[in-house]
Amino acid sequence: MKRAAVLPLLALAACANPPVKQAEAPFSQQPSLAREAARIVPERRFSTVDYLIVDKSERLMIAYAGGQPVKAWRGLQFGDAPQGHKQFEGDERTPEGRYVIEGRNPGSAYHLSLKVSYPNAADRAFARQYGRSPGGDIFLHGQPNALPMGRMPGDWTDGCIALSNDEIEELWRIVPDGTVIEIRP
Image (cartoon, rainbow, N blue to C red; front, side, top):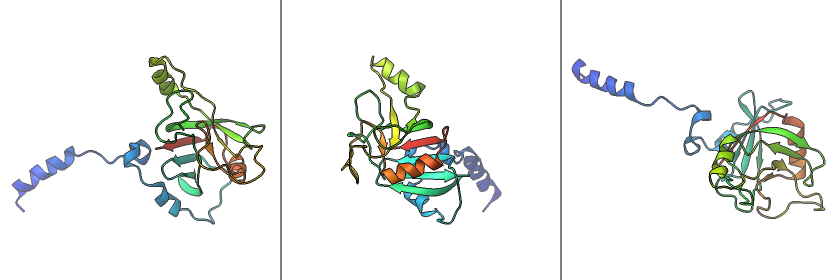
């Protein structure tokens, strides 16, 4: 190839968009969590995790420690209206976005619960422009304490993320307050 023909190609390549880091990519461009779950090495030792990703469409949550996937939970249950980002109190949607675990409730009516920091400033501002409340009290939690055993069928929360009681007990042990949780559509 002639040098004169290569120069315009190099100039075009220099103008191309830089690669997007996973954490900064829009939800639609981020890799499937199922592929991430396949990377989990069962023997990898960890005592706490530092990041959680929930994929609502795959009903999957993966915990990370030191940037590596270490544990996956499948079959998550959401609000009665699971599609779309929570916008207002009572819409029964599960939020989407980046939040943190900001507390825990050992006396929860749902066999332990970890509080998600929804609503954030953007959530409050959006609801305020419509004169509505964004809602709150979003948790990762187990099944209702009144349920003798097993799981409630389908999506049944008011916007929380429900797991089995055994699963929430494990999360309770390994997820410290301040852990980032990213909830994807």
